Figure (tube, rainbow, N blue to C red):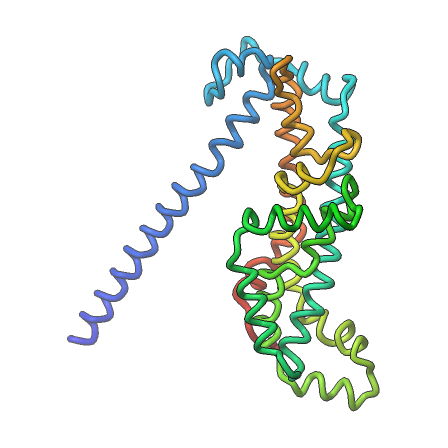
Length: 287
């Protein structure tokens, strides 16, 4: 009887915890969706309405129009140039960051060399330093190298991303060293071992970091603003910001452009969400 009572009590606690968790995440989801819904509704209203009344969750069906979308696709503006620039930079940044960071993390996890712990401590220190602290020294360095107003200056400083290296290293520590030794016995080179044996196992980790790094690259504003001078090289975040200035505004393009700026990140998550949760929680090889 005592065991049954304890079991029922535990089940009740688990049920209450589940209900509370569902309520918490439901509220969190609503808080996240509300701004997206508000900007989506605003995209069907004239830009002046946003200036006068702000964002409104209640759609005014009488004044709803597709004029903003017509302006986006047929108007004379640089939106799609900015969109293409951001898309190109995001793809390049994600691919190169995953490649370089995985190489560094693989070195930390799979090999023993002099100064290994010292260099990893440096990675942890970099991880703890806010970008605003290194922004000006980094700007001075890029300027001295003559890389200003180029996409190289945006991508290069963040190829070996500290948080991505740390995540990959923790993931790779769960891999058995015997896997590497087996590759060497079979005659694989070190690069062959990585690309043929290690990389396929790291798909969940790659997917998780692709989403996070993709979001960071797509939403990056401060650093491109510092190093890019030519308007034709603006990223989408900078370009949308230029629509609001002391000499005029273009809320119509700003609102509908903001809606379309969400789509690439949404597609990125849909493509990699299959492995995202697994990549964030996995730490061992699955048989």
